[in-house]
Image (cartoon, rainbow, N blue to C red):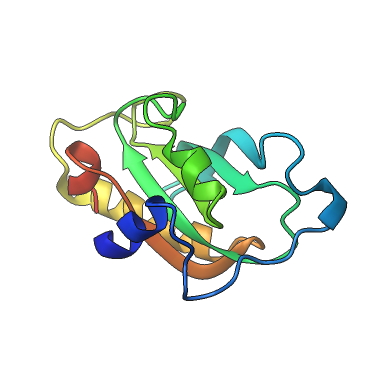
Amino acid sequence: MTAFLLFALSGVDRAAAPVPTMQSPTTQGVGPGYDIEMSRMIPTRDGIALEAWITKPSHLAGKLPAVLELTQYDIDSGRRQESVALAKRGFVFVQAEVRGRGRSGGEKSDDLGLQVGRDGYDLVEWIAKQPWSDGHVFMYGGSFVGMTQ
């Protein structure tokens, strides 16, 4: 999985599947090429909602694989621009904050524990069921974010 994501981030086209066609070929290349849905609240099995930002290619008319980053850090993606890079390469990027961070409900635990695992599972299941998802969900990140995988 990591090699696949690094391959995608390197600027080389994915060989697995073409990016779905956009709604209007005349609008390709106009604007930033991506859309961001900020502060989407995603429910978990126990009713706590986690805040997520969802970055998708603009004018998406098909289904795409998604990359999930479950984090305790800020989800504005300003640090390394992963969301933009992945959206421009045909992925939907979902950044979600753990409980007790940002607008996510609940209380943040000092360890990863069972709750982070359950929340990660619930996020993957939610993403896979979205109309823009082809059902493939990858996780991405290092440090704390890497441990959430």
